[in-house]
Length: 90
Image 1 (cartoon, rainbow, N blue to C red):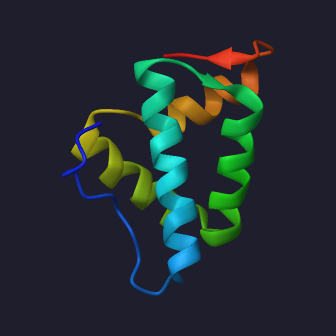
Image 2: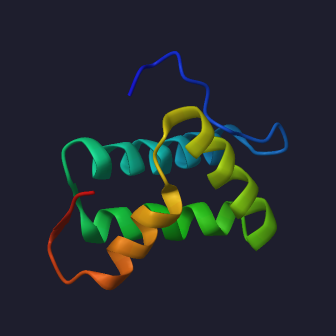
Image 3: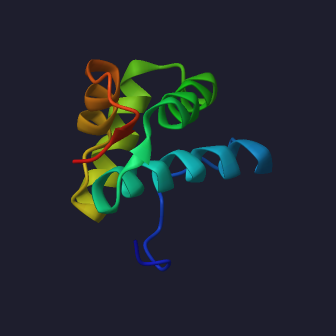
């Protein structure tokens, strides 16, 4: 992913939370570009959900991310949940 693409973030988050959310977005990118360890991806998503517990806010952030990158965080999460493979790739 190009480093100049802004990630959808909230100014209400702490620095640590921003870093963790960016880590999740980078994991989504990895799922699309090269494949990513399923357990690590689900761990990153669980942390994302601690920061963004609201379904509506999650959906808004996922939509913003997809508009910017063309990658669906939702589809990456669904693939990880439904797969038994060690590595997920879309």
